[in-house]
Image 1 (cartoon, rainbow, N blue to C red):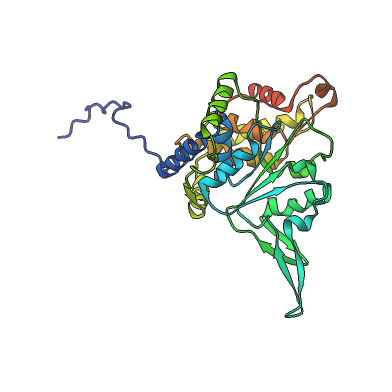
Image 2 (cartoon, rainbow, N blue to C red):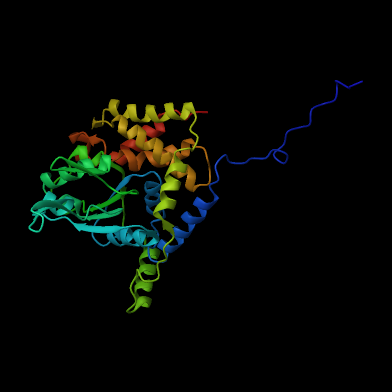
Amino acid sequence: MDDFNTPEPEVTNENVNFETRLNLAPLLEHVNTIKKELETVIVGQHKMIDQLLVAILSNGHVLLEGVPGVAKTITAKLLSKTLNIGFSRIQFTPDLMPSDILGTSIFNLKNSEFEFKKGPIFSNLILIDEINRAPAKTQAALFEVMEERQITIDGSAYILETPFLVIATQNPIEQEGTYRLPEAQLDRFLFKITIDYPKLDEEILIIQREHLLQDHGKLEAIKTILSAEEIKAYQALIKQIRVEQNLLEYIARIVVNTRENAFLYLGASPRASIAILNASKGFAAIRGRDFVTPEDIKEAAVPVLQHRVIVTPEREMEGITSAEIIKQIIETVEIPR
């Protein structure tokens, strides 16, 4: 006869097997290896490196903003060296035309037909240096390519190879010969990453490393880590990261609060909500988790939102930045339990 009074075994941390649904071990190994490669040259800036890696995994574009000399361009070059994909650099200037980026049709005398010659945008990782130096017509040429990963010229659509990532740089201080990026274009960047000056100990280390380099280039020793196929596989894996319903509502509340905040003239659009969702999955993945936490959402919110909102003129005159307002919004929205 069975003993129905036998007590159930106590559930403890020791006898519960916490296993992730997704195998994130190869991704973590590659992420950590890329970090080590970049950190052989880039001193500090750990947050920026994490955000760049999340942007790649989330299939999003990045705007790097900082004064000259804080390693914006060299970071993009170093990142391209760790990836076995096509790389193209475009220097934006006031006289740059859309055809200089996208390509143009050239008449072939041999067959008496027009042939399309692809521009430098037809690559995988595109570095656009000083993006705010080109006029509105050239900026508009990037709209379709950044959002839909395709280009339409003379009625023909050209699909770009995946992965496709734009890293653009801009100097926030110098205004002469620059054009303000339209809000519609800013909205197409997943992240705006603000790069600050290094601290004293980091500055000393930068000088020491430069002194030891002598005639050796910074890029020579960087190893290639990831292939295009691996990047695409990891991008598909990231989409499977679990997000609970209450966290989806948490994201929505943060974004809706930007539209109702008295300090903001323009709030964020639903595209920002989707960007936070995708970025928070990326942050969860590089932390080794197959589920999103409120901390992942907080980490994604500022770089996703700071370039998508506009501070009221009164608050801007007081020196209040969009990042500060977003941080205040995050603090006021109740964290899901």
